[in-house]
Image (cartoon, rainbow, N blue to C red; front, side, top):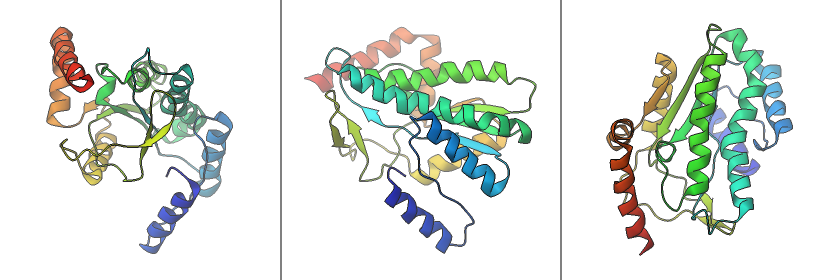
Length: 231
């Protein structure tokens, strides 16, 4: 949840439907908050089997137009937030030989024009996943990253513009979106099968394959999209 009130509301909804759960608020861009969340989980359940790094925020703007502070904020939430949570949880997940899944984005496969900060933060996740996978080899821990496409968003979801102002996310009615339920099921399937990398949606899979075979083609396609949107 993006604020404590909504977190508590979600908590009550799940509890009403018979789920056993706990809730703890925190800012993933602050390491001490990540430690607090993990310690709360351990004190409640005694162990951690799965960590899904899903916290994130989008940002729009070219590198030249975007204020440096926006890059800093995006990296702190999207990249360092996942790193901090993983570092805090890692000793406990080693004990259970569990799973750590990073929720990336198709924007992290090949950079998009006008989304420099966001793409950088999502692409950085791939690097840390590749490194971490080697570092925990032999421990029984599953490390994975999901390249998620356009997913139905909460109507109240926001993003940063190039000046760092928070704005409501534009309507995506013209873009084919995947339901939250389907995306969640795909994430759970990755954990169940202990998959390393997976690009969601047919377009996402095509993007990943083409980017390996001929990144030049992907560059030209996305360049045309960027120019069209800028005009």
